[in-house]
Figure 1 (spheres, rainbow, N blue to C red):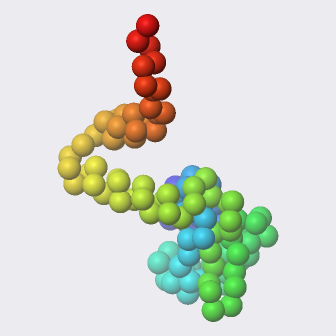
Figure 2: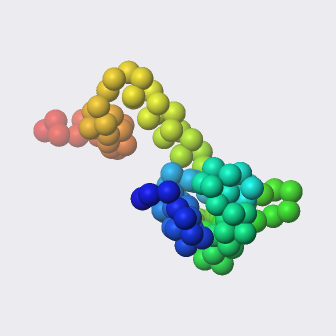
Figure 3: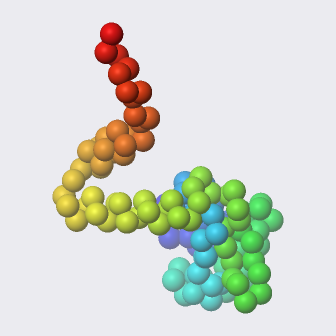
Length: 120
């Protein structure tokens, strides 16, 4: 997606990040002011996008706590997203391919065989 120029486009950008798990449950979004600055948008445009996300139940805004991804809105809770980020950084710095990293994760995910299973 290109740089968002409207509230709808900005909301879609955040919506995608939330639904894909790039932003995990409880993770804080930048302030309206910071987001507006980052994308070169008016603060009113950014506020409108945040309101859209809030009306969809994807984020919760609280005074003094900011705007955070709503519980259950993301595919992954914040600790999983943070661990995935650390894993991605380690994989990239080690020069390992994404396919190899996924293969390792799949192997670790698999349940261990029962002792003696398959030994008839």
